[in-house]
Image (cartoon, rainbow, N blue to C red; front, top):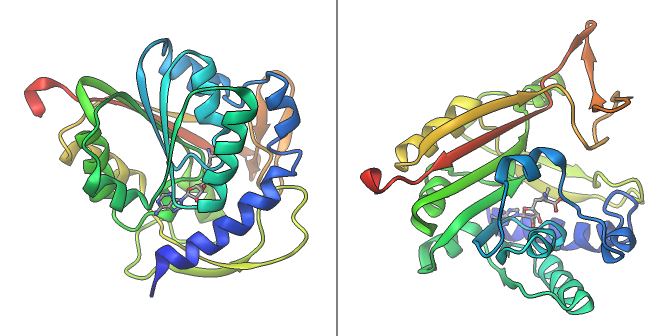
Length: 260
Ligand SMILES: C[S@@+](CC[C@H](N)C(=O)[O-])C[C@H]1O[C@@H](n2cnc3c(N)ncnc32)[C@H](O)[C@@H]1O
């Protein structure tokens, strides 16, 4: 199955829909609002003058938000539509950024550049079939002492939603719309893969990265799952039998000279 092209078609369609959504609020972004959330801003910290690689950057709002924070940014995404929109946003805002329309694995096999920070977030891993190649792409792109930062939706919620928590030999094939409020019901075929937390962590360890921390969160900045409720000052939570569901996790990992 040509999963890259099937998912690319879905993301090309989604990118167009997302651009006009309140969820992504491009107008506020153009007017100066950062698309980054407190979790990643605190985790990644000071980026001024640092070379930052943003994997699966979608149409570039987070990448350009890091540029506004002073980082020298490169964003990579499979969707040519998303990257075209990222280039338009970049020009509109007169910011500097290098955007690359490429499958992450192809990018990883060709990339010769090195970065101080590799960042990726919110809804990225389910699109990838091979986490070892993903982690090696990150490790190879980092300078010695460079940092990897992941903020991702917790797979526990996928389980509650009826999907496998543990990896399967075949991807999940679904016909689905998108997660923004302006989705008109148009569906695309998507192919996704389940990844348990241990698989994510072990892929990073095997690539030679040293995990500095792993955190889990009961609140999400995004209202993108049915049944979420807003808690003032915290974000969105979801209760299962009266208990909070883990909604996000984050990982910081370092490439130390000793392991490279
Ligand atoms: C949920 S979005 C990323 C979320 C991002 N935090 C945002 O909202 O801007 C997932 C992105 O992964 C990209 N993607 C999916 N499969 C990919 C692959 N094999 N290589 C590179 N990018 C991929 C999609 O095109 C999409 O832009």
